[in-house]
Image 1 (tube, helix red, strand yellow):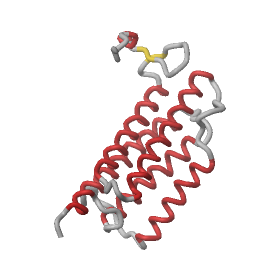
Image 2 (image 1 turned 180 degrees about the vertical axis):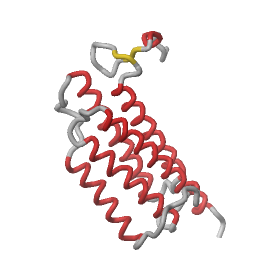
Image 3 (image 1 turned 90 degrees about the horizontal axis):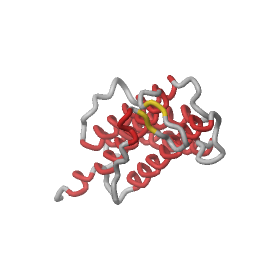
Image 4 (image 1 turned 60 degrees about the vertical axis):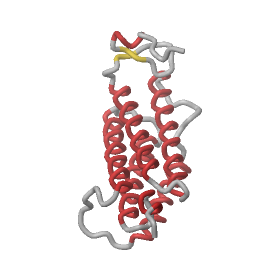
Length: 181
């Protein structure tokens, strides 16, 4: 099976519909930034304790970004909101609940965070910055569909809180779990 098609060699791509658009299109930029954010979440998941709930949370967030990408792609191809694969109010509320739960563990946070306290916190901070870039690309579209921007905004907040929680020992990194005691 070949994975290359050569159709993109002319600088165009398809996001699911019959037409092709320039790879420099703002929507393609937004979709690419979302793809990077999803990969960054995968790096954070690889750095976390697979036996804890964090890995499950992170893979759920990665899957949530599939929904975001599908909704953005459908809006581009059809010129409207799609009826499937849309970010729902429940998805945004779930992110808010996850943020609130972890903030409750942290207590008061003073000052700025310096990324790199441990591998997991660093990976989560990289994911946060990738999500923020995706948010900026979505805002630049001037027509991001539905709750896409709200979801991505909450997602970056959650990445920040998860990074701080991992620094405070509330989210054990794999290296900490495997260390002999």
